[in-house]
Length: 301
Image 1 (cartoon, rainbow, N blue to C red):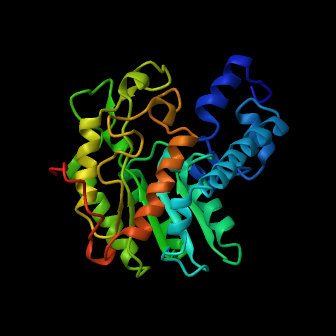
Image 2 (tube, one colour):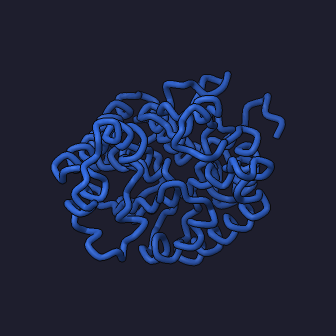
Image 3 (cartoon, rainbow, N blue to C red):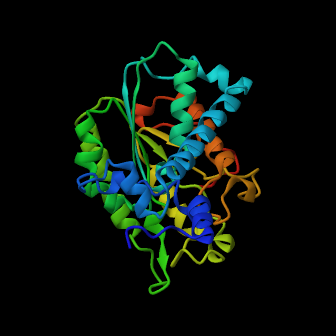
């Protein structure tokens, strides 16, 4: 069993849907041998060289995306107003959208490292694939507070709103419980850092695309995700993309900003998140009081 190698079809699934999110070292940090990359590769049916090559490619994609983003004149104008001193520990708490090896946090990390080369940031990606706010709360002490962060970015809520195929009449985590969970996260983080929390709202999901993928046993719907965004919009701190519009042009999410599951952002989708993150970090008015960017006139929330 230990020597079983993935078939070409299985390798394609790993490459397209799983490997960039399957960072099992983070989910099982105390498992004996978890730091042995050959053992982890073997678990997935890959040779170590093949495994490392794929991971390296995903990380390279994030680096190249950061370089391209820095060519945006508007982004460059924002960089001078970032609220960082240059020696902070920045922790991201999230699910697979954060855990993604070519995801928004990796791109954000490269943007800061390239644009502020003299800085000495410490970046900690505490995203774990498919986590709900309940899952994240259980590991908050180990994965966030123990790092004594100066800044915490929270990107949770997508997988709270799963509607399981065995229970399609309710989300996995109720909005009331999500509200309680994020309040607890907020209070715990406030005890270790004076900087405002940064909340990234869940991006929209293209439900029709998600339903075509056999890997998942749940559905996600925009109406549920709107409820999560409404809760986050009422919080103090930086509220990134409160209306959930970053993946489209105002007419809804665009497919090219997603992988083929319609759930996880593509590199271009992650770039949109980083751009919104930079915009809100530099343009938000008085985040300590919970104020945000002025909403569009047509917003009735």
